[in-house]
Length: 98
Image 1 (cartoon, rainbow, N blue to C red):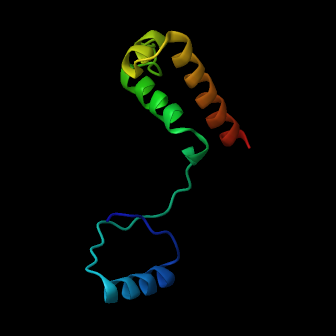
Image 2 (spheres, rainbow, N blue to C red):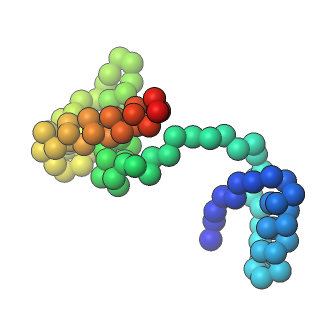
């Protein structure tokens, strides 16, 4: 199992000690927590569409990918890919602005 834990140093040390008493535990890295916009409001399909959009170059400058490229990768209609991207972008932007 692999997971991330966030908290103060003291609380994380206590958590680690308790976890280690029950399981074999290995800490892979320790770093400062940086709050990020949660993609949890996106549906799995919307998140996949955004990931495909990045892969095909849709967000490159200059743009090298198209909605049609996204549709081909997703195996859906051009209009469906466009709607997925628009709704996903809207959710991400609204979350960021709020």
